[in-house]
Amino acid sequence: MNEGLKVNASGLPRDHLEAGSAENVSAAASSQTPVVEPEPELVVNPWDIVLCASGTLISCENAVVVLIIFHNPSLRAPMFLLIGSLALADLLAGIGLVINFVFAYLLQSEATKLVTVGLIVASFSASVCSLLAITVDRYLSLYYALTYNSERTVTFTYVMLIMLWGTSVCLGLLPVLGWNCLQDESTCSVVRPLTKNNAAILSVSFLFMFALMLQLYVQICKIVMRHAHQIALQHHFLATSHYVTTRKGVSTLAIILGTFAACWMPFTLYSLIADYTYPSIYTYATLLPATYNSIINPVIYAFRNQEIQKALCLICCGCIPSSLSQRARSPSDV
Picture (cartoon, rainbow, N blue to C red):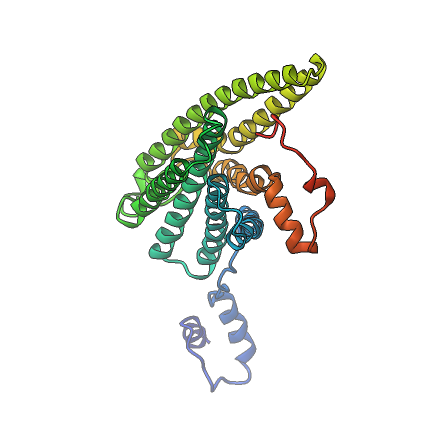
């Protein structure tokens, strides 16, 4: 009996056991044989699902804007080139979020992680830079209203596009070219594999661009108020009408800037003060609103534009509503 127990505990099968001792040996062996646990199933983080869904919505929404601008020859003014740049950047950012989800759970490797993070960094950088370029373009269109529609403006727009995309691509290539924390975990930021210094540079750059946008929008607001006052005097409008028009323009600017700050400021400040030791839920909670900015951008900058609305109506129903064809631009349309 003792020999039988010893053999079974070793995990080796016995084909020739005596009938009288078979039951006892089986019971003893089952109590001593280690239980082989099944391989753990792949658990998907709910935050990653939300980010992937956000990326899908971003991609679909901005793809519509890119197609409208690309297939409509009349939308080649500097303003539409910049709106197209913003939509393209947000489209790539949405694709990057989806690819990051797929690679994280289906094709895990350091190379894919570097490529996807680089794509996301480059795309969101281009998105923020495009927002700054649009702000600069709006300021120039109001400050130099008489000479804005000139060849010089188009050249300046192309220079801005080349600079912003070149800078964004360089920022996205930094992790791929070696500036990452894969070899030294202690240097990681809240977004692995970005280093703490890399994240700090991105955050400080964002704060600088936000301050510049704030200054430009303050100047735009002053110009809008002055233009609205001049129009009111020329057409003998009542003071109430002038106040309503001015307030609408200021409110539009406040919504644009406030939305941008509300989406990006939490993640920017968190990236400056936190590192890889902080709970990941804080990173998800601050990063998710930043992705929402790419969902809101087409609504603010593209679908509110009268020319893009006309092009979209032509594509969808083959006609232009009379309300769009007869609508005149007012000083509040900034």
